[in-house]
Image 1 (cartoon, rainbow, N blue to C red):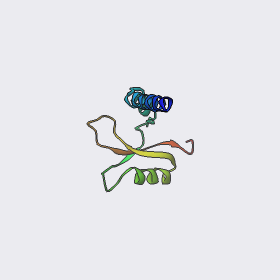
Image 2: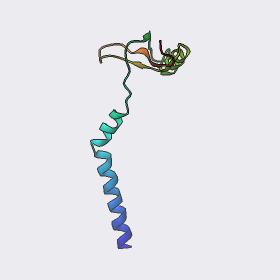
Image 3: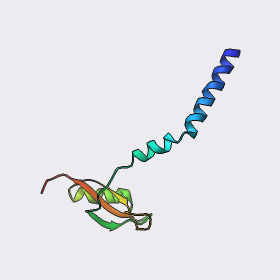
Length: 88
């Protein structure tokens, strides 16, 4: 019983340490994809025109992907497309 209790306490300490680790923030930040701002079209408006609509519009225009992004925190979110299928 003592060994089980020690193992459970150790497991909780590990989970707590991982949840408080700053590496979680760094890892999630590393997953953000970079977008070029060369092909930005529509203004994104929450509840009206979002990431899904942007992605559909971009793929219909021949791009591989698209998302609502902003250049700076002060700029509005716009639908930006990148990774063009064809090379022109």
